Every structure is written in structure tokens, then in C-alpha cells.
Amino acid sequence: MHKKGTIITFCVMVIMIGMAATSHAATSWYVSPTGNDTIGNGSSGSPWATLSNACSKVTNAGDTINLAAGNYTDNNPCTLGAGVNIAGAGSGSTYITSSYSGGYYITLVYAPAMSGAGTANGNQTISGFTLDGNNKALLSGIQIIGYNHVTLNDLDFKHINEGAIKLEGLDNWTNILGINGEDYNVPPPYYGQYNTLTNITITGCSAGSTASDPYGAVGTSVWVHSQQYMTWNNVNIDETPSTTTGEGFPVVSVPGWINASTINNCSFRVGNSGWGVTNNGSPSTFQMWNIENGTIISNSNFYEGYISLVAGDMCGGQGNGSSSLITSCSATRALIFHDNNLIDTAYQGGTGHELSLSNAEYYNNYIEMGTAGFWVATHSFNLTGMNNISFHNNIVHNANGNSVIIQTAPANVAISGLSIYNNTFDTAASAWPYSGILVQIANTLTGLAVENNIFMNFPSGYEIYFYTGSTTSPKISYNDYYNTTGIDYIYSGASAPGLTAINNITSNPEIVGTGSKYPYFTGTYYQLQAGSPMKNAGVNVGLSFTGSAPNIGAGNSVTLSAPTSLTVQ
Image (cartoon, rainbow, N blue to C red; front, top):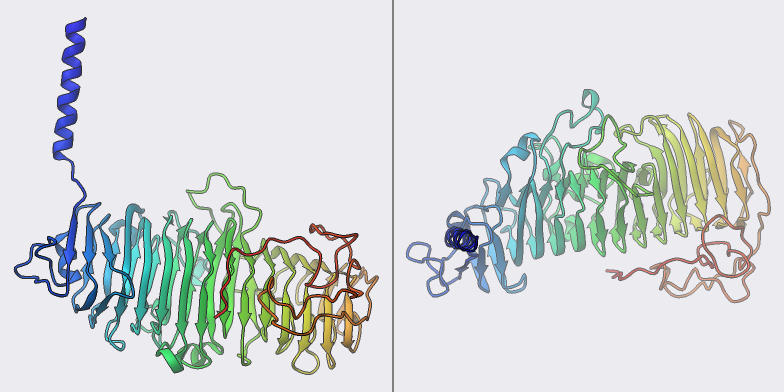
């Protein structure tokens, strides 16, 4: 037995040594502005001159292409191998200028994903350089399709013609456009997973049309869909036409399907002109559809234009099916949207921000000049209704129109379970019929609760205006109406059977009235003065609070979590 055991042990050792001899050790390769693509061999002593050349030669997963600091001109594409890393010396040190007009400068594509057949692990990082499109001569930046565990970090994109980043799990799948091509209600069978964007700056990288792409990808700076467990942190995009040459939108995710993902500490800016306004009626800062399973958007800034958040659900219950990847789920919301600033400096047209999804929670947000719009869009799977929405502890200042609008249109299906608690609505900039909350119903609205809110400075409008339709058993209580014209007004063409309207007051809320209006936790303007009659005057609506009762308004005693970081730009 002893000899047999020795022989077995020896054989195992030989096999392990053989495996080690044939496995690939990670190798570092080098590119330098002083390198040479013809005679260089990619070593530190004899580097190549361009990234595109290095990509054609480095194909082993785990290898890294190192870009030395300096300026590069590279007019050829990089087809990147799975698992191959790119590491520049930093976006402020490594600078690549490209005029490649044939497509994406960097392409990382898993072929089966182009037909919806699956995804693969990339396990790689692209980082540390600036990509300059040479005044829009470069067609597109980086395309990643069908890969998981890919990180983009410390990258700066400038003046690229048709988009900086395209990130997709699958490029296409069966019935991606839904029934008759009208809806986006069929989830992908696979998602790209654990992909990360951190410390990304994008300036003027959207085109002025979508003519070459029916999904609209070329009209946006970052195009993304079919992603699960995706993380964005410190992604800053400016597509202001007058200063950046951007013509389209900062972010579009259509048909979307963003699952259990996080977007934090980001900034998105669009201008008041350009293709997006001409063809869309008003600019859009951020569009994301089919949001799933506790996705969080937080501590971010949205400048000019409206945001479009359309269709959402929990635990893969959307549309005509659910993802094969979702086998269990503990999410209580499809979307949690908190501690964000939505700031317009001029009226953009349109109805307002499109908050058009079920199972969503919005809190601690500051909205200036825009309207928080809750309606059922026709381009969503929510055609059976929209429900379970909480809008609390927000500030809406100087809305050009209504602070909040609730519509069953344009899809004209039911809305249920909409809670509007502890907000401060200050000033409707336009005359009647603009108001604090406009209810314009063509189908059914049930479960509307409006409590603990401050409505102030609506000299020509009404606080809650039931304009059309029938709203069943709304609860309108413990609100403060200050410097306004009426209370709980019901238009002759509307009805609110079972209305409960109790303990509403008309006192001066005695806000501080000076200092910054936002962000939520550091702004002093809407905080209550020590003797404010709003303190401890609200009703318990299920949010945790300190004191004998919740305060009325956003500057209140409800216990909330402060953001980890928020930079206002």
C-alpha cells in the first residue's frame, strides 16, 4: 500500500507540473509615444506606438496593455480580446486623438450576444486615458456587448461624433420591441452582469440624429441596456450644444432592462437647443426604461431637460416573461430615487419629468422649474396599470406648471397606490389652472394620499386640483396651504367620491427663507424655524420620525439617511 500511494502521489505531481507548464502567466505589454509599431515587440524596452496595433497582437486573457503617458494619434480601431486589460497612466496623462470614422475606436463584443444567445465573462479593466474624437472625426468611442465583469475607470471622452460608450448585455433578442413593435415589454433572456463605470467624464459626444440606428443609440452619449448588478459612480456627462458640440442626450437606456443596479454621485447635463429639442419637443437629460429589482439612482445631478423613467417592477415580473437569471428576489421597489437634484434654469416645454413606473420610491430630491409627472406611458409594459408609488420628503421649487401632475393618459389605464407625503411645493410660476397637484384622469385613480405637505405661493392656482375624471376616496389631510387661493378644489368636470379632507391649515410655515435651497441635507432655505407651526403638526404616515409627531413639509422630523456624497456642479 505504501508503494502504491507513493506512485499515485508522484503521478499527481507530474500532472500538476504539466498543467503549470502549459498555463499562461499574465504578461504586461507596453505602448509609448516614442514606440514603433514596425520594429517594436511590446516590451518595456521596445514598446509599440499605438493602442490599435497592441490590440491586434495581445489576445491572451489576463494580459495588460500599458499606455505610457503622452500624446498619441491613432486612426485605426482596437478590437480588444476578452480578458485583456488596457491601463493608461491616467486620463490627465495619457491622451489619444483618433479620427477613425469606421465605427467604435475600441470594440469588445462577444459574438453570441449579437443574436441574443448569451454572455461571457470579460474580467477586465479599461482605464487611465483620454480619448479625443478630433472635433467629431472619430465616429464612436467604446463598445462593449455581451461581457460581464468589465470595468471602465478614469476615462475622459471628448468631442466624439456618435457616442462615447455603448454598453449592452445583448444587442438583440426575440421580440425585443414587444408586440407589433409598439412596446418594450419583453425582457432579455440574459443580462450583462457586474459591469462598472467609475470616474468617467464625457463632453460633447452625442450626434444630431438617429438616422443610422433605429434604437437611437447614435443620438446619445452613453447608450446602455440589458444590464444586471451594474454600478456607476462619478460619471459626469455634459452634452450642452453651445459649449461642448453635443447635440443629443447624455444617457438613453431603451428598451432598457436595468436590473438591481446602482447609479450614484453622477452628473448629467443637456442644453436647451440641438437635435434633441428640435425632434423631441424638449431636451432629455436621462432616459431609462424597464427598471427592475431595487435599482438605486442617488446623490446625482440632472441639469436642464426632463428625465424619463418608464416601466418598472420587482422580481422579474414584467411584461410577457421574466429573466431566466432571476430565481429569487428580496426587492421591495423596482426603483429607489433619492437625494438627487433636478434643476432647470429655463422652461423646457413638455409636461415635466416622466416618473412612469410602478413600485418606485422618490425621496430627498430637489426639483426646480420642472414638474413631477406620474402617468402611464404608451411605450411601456405598464398597460395594465401603474401602482405602489411613494413620493415623499421632496422639494419642488418654482415649477413652470404644476408641481405634480397625475394622469392616466396617454395610455389611459388605472393608477393605484400613490402616496405624496411630507413634501414642500413652493410657487407655481404660471397662472391658473397650474397648481400644486393636478389630477387629470381619463381612467381610474385609487389610493391617492396627500398628507403632511406644504403648499405655498400659488397666488393664481390651487393646491390640489381635480381637473377631470373620477378619483376614488382620496385622502387630503394635514397639509398646509399658505399664500394660495383655495383648498381641495374640485372642478365641475371632475369628482372625488369618498374624499377625506381633514386638519388642513393655512399658517405661515415659517421656513428659514435664506441660504441654499439644495441639496436636501445641506440646504437651509426650506428648513423650519424654531417656532414654526409645522413642527409636530403632521400625522403618522408610516415613515419613522422624531418628536411627538412628524412635521409638515420637507423640512421635517422624519428620520432619513444622509447621502454618502453629493457634489453640486
